Structure formats: structure tokens, C-alpha cells
Amino acid sequence: MTASVTELTVTAEDRRVAWLAAAAVGLSLVDAAIPSPLPGIKPGLANIVTLVVLVRYGWATAAWVTGLRVLAASLLLGYFLAPGFFLSLTGSVLSLAVLGLARHLPARWFGPVSLSILAAFAHIGGQLLLARLWLIPHDGVFALTPLFATAALVFGTLNGLIAAKLIAENPVESPA
Amino acid sequence: MRWLALVRPGDWLVFAAGVTAVAASLPLLLQGGYPERAIVRQEGRIFAEIDLRSRREVEVPGPLGVTRIAVEPGRARVVSDPGPRQYCVRQGWLARPGEIAICAPNRVSIQITGRTRAYDSLSY
Image (cartoon, rainbow over all chains, first blue to last red; front, side, top):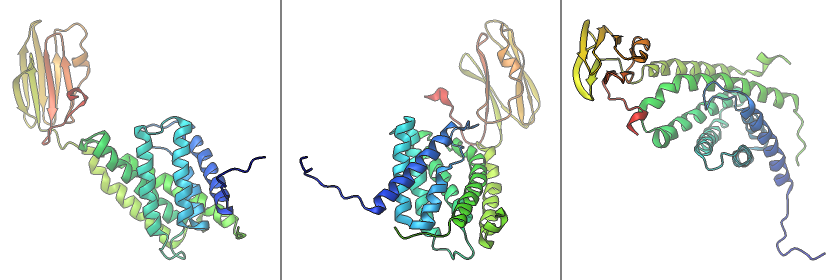
């Protein structure tokens, strides 16, 4: 067999990111299958993966997993480079930024639930801003803010609880 | 494992902050401001601009006959219209800025406006 010219070495970290991103993509598909009363209001189950990864492996891995998830989910669901993709991307970038700050909060006091709620609000905030600036250039979009904020609070709390449970139930982590 | 055990003290704070944020955003539901006037148009020209604090009835003549419009504090509606399908009458009261009832056959419309002029998809 001819040796390949470019040799890609796959590290354990790469494999882990791939596994976790695959799990997140799976949850994104589940998300998309859940009927929603209003476009943009959905549980955001994939964020559970982001939270667990953030707590377990740090911010950089979480950013990779989230980025790959947004890309792969948009390809699978057929909205790559459509408005929904940029909304999803903006929301994810903003919530990652907020998570990057929020994870420095003292862990004794602020757990995954806090992180999840903060990230959910950042997500919806980013999406609303992009929608206002680009898709619907009128302040009318902000009329939907209370609905989105309520969804962010409810789903942020639930996802945070699920993430906290997952983290608490799998405490031992062998360094890969 | 019980769910409450997963919630740390600060989490309650963040949750409370979230509830506050939701409560603070509620006034945005009234976006577009309060309804201030009803604009009555006939053939696209402004027939009357009525302050929504007043109580009035207006009769607008059109090609089919007279469309009667009622204005009450905070709302307005088409009371009767000679058009065949009565869509604008059946729309009932209009109370939010941007709402509009169009009696197309008689070429009459009423629109509610607030302090800021609201666009709708028709402007595209």
C-alpha cells in the first residue's frame, strides 16, 4: 500500500471531540424533531453536551464540540448558510463567550445550572440581535423577547439540571 | 439522586436573575407603543385621522356605498361595509399599532398607529 503523502495524526483529544460532537449532533436532530410553537423556541438539548464538556474538558474542547455540532447539524438538517445557520452560529458564539467568563465563577456556589441559564440567555440575546440587525430590521422583533426569555429560562434550567446530573453521576474521569 | 441536590446556592441567584430578566422584558410585548390614532383611508388617500382617546363614528363614502367606522378609546373597528364578503367587519376591534382592516371592495381601510410608525410586510 502506498504511504499517504499527508499523514494525519489523530490524537486522543481529536477522537474525544469527534465522539462528543457526534453526541451533540444527535441531540440537535432530536431537537429539530420536537414540534415548536414558534421558530427559535426549542429545548437546545445539544447544549447539555456543551456544558458537560465545558466542566469536564475545559473551554477549548467545548468550543470545538459546539462549532462542529453547529456545522454538522446544519448540513444534516439542510440549513447550512441559510439564515437559521447564522442565527445558530451567533447564539453559540455568544453563549460560548459567556460560558468562558462564567466558568470562572466559584464552583462551590455556581454549578452547571447557572452556566446553563447564563448561556441560554446569551444564546437568545445573540439571536435576537442578529435578527434585528440583519433579518428583520425593525424593533418589532423585540416584541418576542418575553417569549424567548421565558424559553431560555425554562430550558436553560432543565438542561443545566440534566448536565449537572450527568456530571454528578459520572464523577471519575480517567485522563485520556 | 434528587434533583434539588444538584442546585448550588448561586444557581438560585442566577435563576432569580433570569426570572427578573423575563419580568423586565414583559413590557416589550406592548412593542410599537400604545395605540394613538386610527387612520381612515379611502382610495389610498387619508380620509380622517382620529385620536384614539375620542369616541366617534365616521361614515366613509366609497364606490359601493357607505362604510361605517367606530372609534372608541383605545380601539377602532368597521361597523358595517357594503362589500360582499365582510372581511373587514369580521376582523372586529383593532387595538394594536400596525393593525389594519381593509374593506377592499369599497376601497376603505383603517389602520391603528402608535407613536412610532410601524412597518409591515406590505412595505417590502
